[in-house]
Image (cartoon, rainbow, N blue to C red; front, side, top):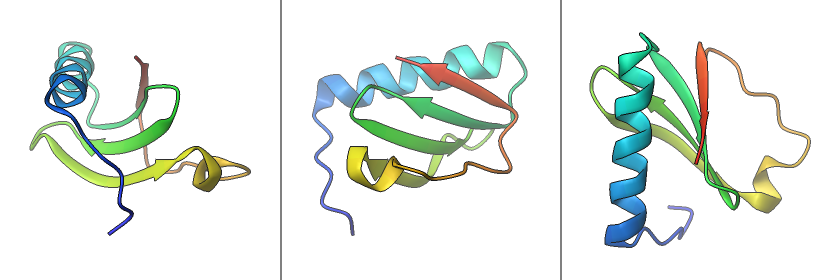
Length: 70
């Protein structure tokens, strides 16, 4: 609904970041790639929320227990 494009390469990078979070025991992750933030349920590999740069400004991320910067 936010019209954020996800190329196959970007999906592969996101999947890799989820795997890194899983290896560290993270359950709910904030994954950032410089232009987009993703809140991901790691156990189900489900993106809960995604925001672009403008939407991230002055936002508070809650209910996460780890972060991965891509």
